[in-house]
Image (cartoon, helix red, strand yellow):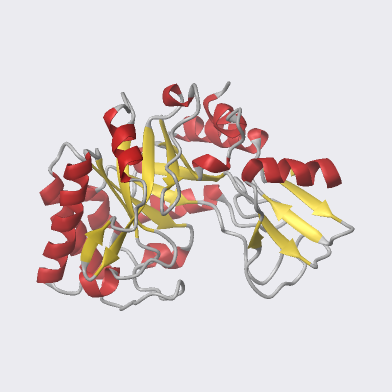
Length: 325
């Protein structure tokens, strides 16, 4: 089973793995390379030495170069022409080879959509496929090519899934941040419950119907929380996306200690409602992650990935729950 961690790099020091986690993980996606002037770029990385050192000593772990992320543009104009696709594909392969990555993960959020404030075109759907096919050709059959895919029907409809799946080793389902922007609900629940929430299971079904075999679907998990503010509880109307809670899982624990842990057994979704602050907090915890791991094994999925490694606590409580420790 794939157990993949995204580790955000950016301008901060690259955090290597905690003791024991090398044996718990199969893949590490280092995020993010960007698209600048039509080329793949990691010029913004301030920690290249640390990243190279990690890759050199990674052992069995597959180190993947993840490209894009929320609000990262440049994709649509870069892949709009054959020359543009050639330039972007080649520069990303060059970066991958230079660092010694085992493959590339594409995190364009999202083709045909400007919801993240990036360039978009209806032609992205076809152009993305052409670019992926070229990228696969340049990488060769022995390198990993994966993509992050949104947990919405609109994301499926904006992709030529039947063609993409032939080029991809697996697809990372972003089955988090699924919380609606018009009412309070869970952001990474496994199943739909009486709360009428979005669910990981529904997204899996969505992509399977589009033509992706279960063995190529990697379920997403969240090592962070979302918080709805000034609300009265589940399904209360809101106007806009819920905020992030700072501090990762340790920050979540502080909220649990203050207000108590609630759990929707049918949805496999933990949450906290702070009556005093009128805040509804939604997240994954060891119980929900163990449920996701069981679901993956029971349904034949390819594995699990999570955002983001450094949000776990010092004892790797969330990762340990995934692998059954």
